[in-house]
Amino acid sequence: MKLATSIRAMSSSFGLLLCAEGFAQTSSSLPASDPEKEGVPSAAIQSFIEHLEEDIDAVHSFMILRHGRRIAQGWWTPFDERTPHLMHSLSKSFTSTAIGLAIGEGKLSLDDPVISFFPDDTPA
Image (cartoon, rainbow, N blue to C red; front, side, top):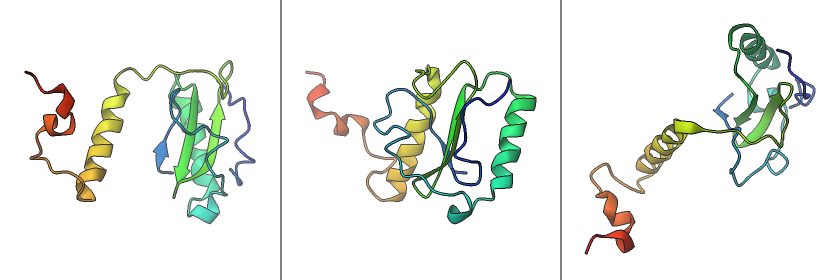
């Protein structure tokens, strides 16, 4: 399996992998940056891609963000930027990460009752 779409010249285009249909921001709306400008060696990204190609047989695409900027992305044939991807149970990982960040920022506590965030759904 070979990477089909360019990776913004490898040195011009690690963190969070986001590649799902339904995200509000598409790759074109995320600001792009060079990996080195964001503190990531291009060689590390190249090594990551080589690992994907050699050891993992079901990767369709990837996107790497650092400091809120897109530093690398790519797709393997026959997939492209417009291909929707099923996330299955991966949303649990995003949800738990978001909850952890919100707790860290003091926006909620582990002791908060879930129903307090959905008052209109309280049983009668």
